[in-house]
Length: 228
Image: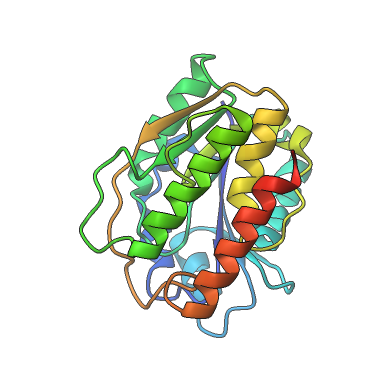
């Protein structure tokens, strides 16, 4: 399978190099870092580590992901699978093969890396993150009838399936939009336990501030109800 991996990044100078270097190079064709208006050396560090660096001036996690998807789709041949991982080095990129196996074996169209069912380093997720994830997956179970355990950002999906979802969200609702739309489109979805650690440097752009936590929570909940 041809696999491209997309890493949205905003001011991740201290961690992005570690993320790029930890990705198994024999498993991916392109490591695509989308620099989302960083004011530090994120782009330079990512390029030095071997990534293809794109620039997205529209601020937002989803906006950066969409820029990366457009690049991957325009590459010939397009990838069979697109993977996503954050740029803060909280995930373990070396676990990418575990997220690819269910797709390779025809068991899934989308695979979510679950922090909830994996090994989570103490302090790697704030209490509000833990609660927010629990609430989001509980609501999706009640409304859509599927038992997710997490909104984990480390995930893989068939490119054809991803394009069918017609992703739109530009900000905090990106991950939950993908998971809700996957159910609406009756994709085969599975989860794989992932290890998760404290972010490599700095504080979370979302959970690290009260404003970010409130905005993310609101957007996630409204996105869940949006597609009923």
